[in-house]
Length: 362
Image (cartoon, rainbow, N blue to C red; front, side, top):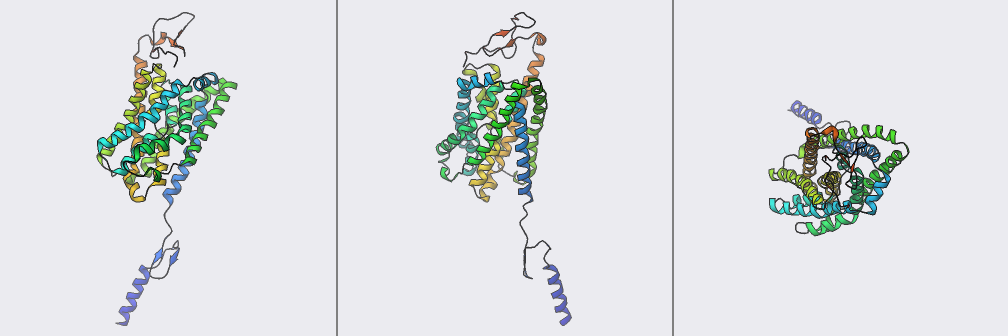
């Protein structure tokens, strides 16, 4: 009997032996330190991605001409169209879709938060690849990020009170400020380089545009891998995450077209409207909601991010195919900002290419 009790005691002791990294061990229980590897990895990746985005935006700034950029600021008709899309159409679309799909209240809130976020820097990278108006694209992203400091609380107050107290949603003004600085400062340096050393600016632009395209895909892949445990959600949230960015691209293009913008500006406004700052949306919900609520809503920004990239790539491929199959590609007419055809080889060519839509100057 005594031997049996000794053996039992030995087995219990061996089972309750705490590992070396235990913080508390009283013989009957042990407390392990929290496994924060995922949080540390997320912080490191966020820092690296922020730095890389800043470098990419520096290269995008190398496309900007001071005169044209300042022209958009002095006569902000294109920016005004983008503002109406960003803080008018997108939040309203999010509200209507949330009602139409009859989703869970906290999921409706995250959809509206996404609709209220400003445009992301991904729109600037894609605008370059679809021959958009880079001066307009960067000025729109800058202004929407700055105006988000006031427009986001207003839109959230108007559209979320049906489901939640809007005062409980924490707006990360520091994150918005960081996003603004990481946009304005690199772009400012890029503009300066383009002004002083235009040849070097073109080389920087080639490298930055390729890096930016890779970075967009990398962000989506990393997000999917880091939060792969959150993919078990309702099918209609998947559908909504597909429809919402598509609606943003379409409505942005239509509104720009109706305001008589050039084709390049229509593409620019479309990208700026559909491609939201998903990182900012993720930060807001992490600060504002409990872990139980996060399990229902955290995946939506990832879904939106993936499909906004897919639709942007479709737009890019469609544009490139249209260019490839357009007639008389080698002898196309170049349209300047006033809508006047510039000459090729010293002669005015009457044929028109994809960016021939006349603009009334707004």
